[in-house]
Image (cartoon, rainbow, N blue to C red):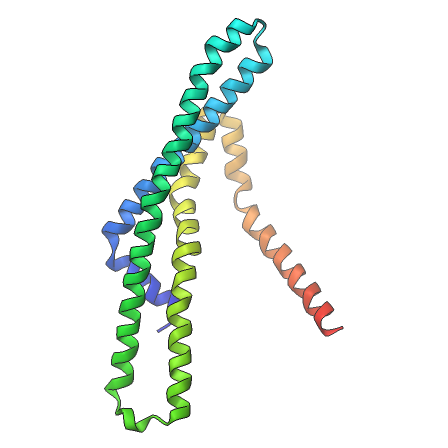
Length: 194
């Protein structure tokens, strides 16, 4: 069993927590859209406002809404990090239990000290790798699954041509990142061996 297959099993097992995380990402995405709208309105007032009173009466309430948006995003970040931490700790515990069960299913005397040490090292690496998956990979996956469609819908509602352009160019980004990463890896390998 690989770490990625174990991660998929854990996500399937914890659907309710994953749904709650998705709702938190959805709320944060809506707050991001509201913040972008407020910022655009403030800039519009500053750019096209002819009188100081006009700018003040329109922009000051928008600054209040923008402050609410920033505080709301910060408040949503706390439970999201806590839930991800609980999910990670639970997954690490379950993986440790599986590793111990697999090791002790065989006779502990059948393992040589070298083999036992290698297995222990691999087990620790696998359990530690889960932290990176839950701290980095899971938020990116949720962002792609939840926030990306939300932002595309918001773009399409604000300006259909911009939404269409974003939708068409969206598949290009991962390909370009792959090419840049490959070129960088080749250059660094060349420099390392030189």
